[in-house]
Image (tube, rainbow, N blue to C red; front, side, top):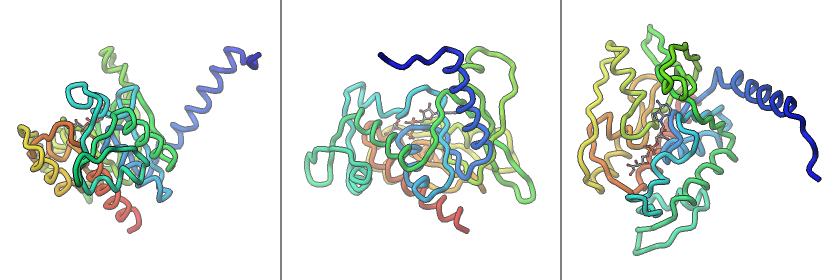
Length: 259
Ligand code: 48F
């Protein structure tokens, strides 16, 4: 027999424990917006240092664009040196030729997710980031403004909640949503989002890693959001730069937190 747990007790456990987490994340070291490959990789390396790391994703499933593979074929290609990261998170892969690897989408999602969680990152689903918190003198980003994703979908007029963080990472993918918000709502930040260009896989991969970093004080960008921000091409289902960009932004943010 399975032990009986009355309905009201299940409800109280869920609400009490979830609220404890929300009270803690009202003030974090790092908030990452987006649980795709770049955001999860960044969370894995940052959380290992003991920094209080939170990922918010508007969907109720992890992995962002990983699950779609290439046109729904369940494989992802990765090129060297991103295989270092695959080994860090213990993903099984096949080496097709020197420096070119292929792996299953489900395995990449599950290993990235479990590695980030085991490192100590808190991942919350169904949370939409719709704005940022900013400060002047000096002008900087100091957090995000979030609301359950179901609320804007239902077109309800409900005020969101502000969550403070020492660093905010935009890992929202092709739309660079957080950077776009800053560009639109804080004109004195003088940020222009150039928008992503058409496909040129090898150029795109190097572009992503090269331009990964701080876009504005307190705001960092990783993954496809880099290409959208700075006008780089797309690369399709080769994910080396998503992983390497996640690791690079982690190294930059860890350095800043130590300053
Ligand atoms: O799109 P996504 O996977 O971003 P990524 O890490 O990786 C891109 C690749 O998947 C692929 C590619 C590489 O070859 O081109 O597309 O750059 O994951 C972004 C995640 O952010 C969430 C979204 O639901 C997705 O899971 N997201 C986007 N905007 C918001 C958000 C927002 N405003 N609030 C919360 N979550």
